[in-house]
Length: 327
Length: 187
Image (cartoon, rainbow over all chains, first blue to last red; front, side, top):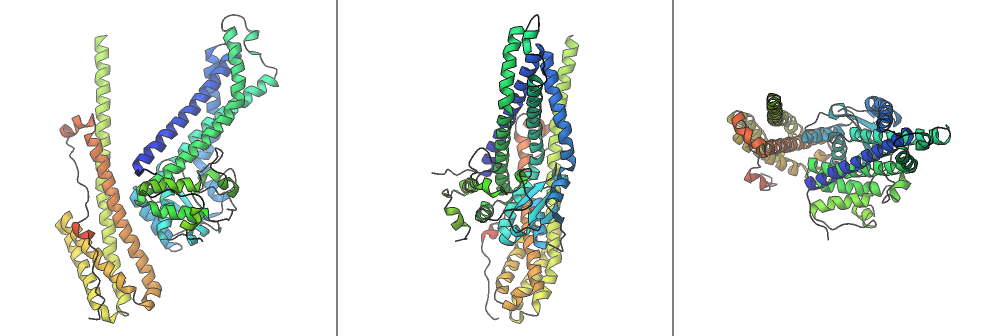
């Protein structure tokens, strides 16, 4: 039995979950830094230094993608910017949603591909771009297009691109730290923890050293899973924001159903860019995406969350094609 | 020592008050911007309508009443702009319903429906109607945000003394809930 909810409640839940997940990753980074630092040097200052160093390095690596990332992604996907003359209805829809969101009009791009999909990029609403495939423009009607554009602008307005970068910095720091530590310990012939040291902290340092090794193996995997969970939360949040902007869950629902029924593979997408798209463009991931390993929630789950907003009963996967009118 | 503590406390209170004041000012300005944006969209619609009427006039010899209704409603809406928000909203809603009647009638003319000019004007008017309603929606969202900021604790203690008052939502007219009647007779 579905309970009726509203988009604001869904948004609060998603935001709370995102913060919780980011907190978990931060704690993981702190634990890793602390155990490595203390375990190798026997002193707390070592822990601070090591953790800070890893964060700074990960930030340096991410800064480039913060400022130039959107151009790289747009270039890699073969997107071409469009004007009012070329695509009047698309530009009108983007203008409508920008007004609803109170944000400036983003740059609009079209990707020549029959697979229906879309993505948004840009570090804040003033520097945003949206790209749509020709496949999507052909398959969706005006109401459905509004829903999809509102989802993408929702990502921009919620600063999801910046948020994803924050998570990537944390996860990157964990991976770097774990990697350096394991190499240094097992191949660099480095200190074997507290056993070499005289004086205080010897026993504790040895224990922490062992904990550090365990964490160094496990933490990167856990961090990656958390990163995927965060990505899924932000997708749900963008769906709820789409409803906030259009006040119409049905357009987005039908768009999702239409895209679910489509078997085409988006040629320009790959594992590095899959998280940016409206639905997971790598089809085999989509089919088993109720798992922890996907950047996007399963389309059926997204549709059912939208149905919670209208009070309609939830669907099972086999209903989805019927909903899109594809049968 | 007590002096230092006192200064710190005063400093913190001052920072909080400034923060609250700035937040309220920003939100109030956003409402005014949203209001101006609505006016922009309404004007855009006024400007589009003469083109639409000209495009369909030649095809619709029997539907003069619908066309004159639209033209008159547009003129009324333009002049209502100077008469305040309530009068303007009423006139604009009247214009919306005459436009709906016009589009309902166009459905009966296959030549007209396929005409490229008319199609692109129809898209322009559809998007203009949407933009007007989204502008109003954004205005309401801004008013909600501002009113919330006014009324939560501790802002509520400062709002009155600092000169901030509650703003009203844009509400649809009761008449807007009625479906417009379309007269398809050949009169």
